[in-house]
Length: 389
Ligand code: SF4
Image (cartoon, rainbow, N blue to C red):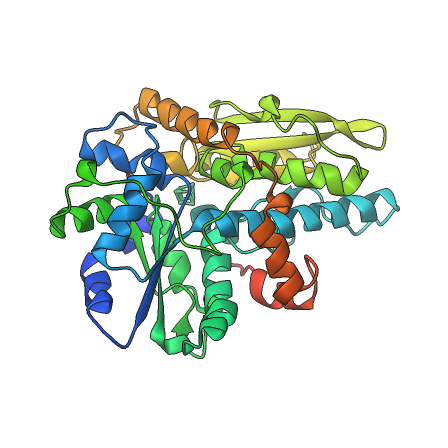
């Protein structure tokens, strides 16, 4: 099945967590922070009468403050962080490959979609060494919040509650995976969907459309345009290409718009002529929907298709079409408008490359060291497990 309205993985976990959020907000001993995924802001407005694709970021931030969150942060910050680690991994694999290392695993696969990760763990257990080991933005955010920010703020780990607002039902499952916790305390405490946020706004008696627009809190409220496009199919790999290009070639990338990576066909292959491998362009595969993903992976496995990087998202259109979004009933026109809405946010940003986000640079200088370094490895990378029955 495909993630059209309800995700097959997330469906098992489709539980309304709004009450748990309210409960935590009412507990004076807890500091409750929230992170919001890129796809949420171009769809949440639909629940309040806006057209699909309308960017309601400012009102959404104000609403989250009114609901009572102590800090309103952006998963996009962590999407930039994901790109730092994924692009470093792509660069290291490409460099090793060009040095003649026969054991290097290419293509590299993106790993931010938990439904897709679970799918590969079940169906392709012999290919678990190809996905990037970078955690998803949701999990990177929470690891950094609990291990770095909480300490800076003098908050005990158990007193910091991280809530995520996701377009996704599988993110609830991801948050519950044991490897994303420390001594029984999860990194992400509660994950709610875009629809659950809309209902929380309504339950709180907030007139969404009357709200002023406010900005995210610092430091995790700042992000590049590259982070925004995580919400649509092809976006993660486009963001990674922007950074990997500069890190592999040592040259500045002037035109960040890799238009060949954009589109809504279920599966496609695009070439990046600016990045040559063995005298041929870097080849990227993109699939969304698990049926198309399976076909693409089988081609790679049977060596019918030679690719260097692959992005797979379980939902049609990527996270903009996620199972936790306002219902779109599989309507292509709605997905397309959300896609355009996300693209407009990216195009309107001054900083459009993840590695140029000043707060990301500061985080590496102050705390993480180098991408893929020891600290980054400990907090930002993960492992995969065979789940073959
Ligand atoms: Fe969740 Fe996005 Fe994956 Fe859909 S594509 S399951 S919304 S992470």
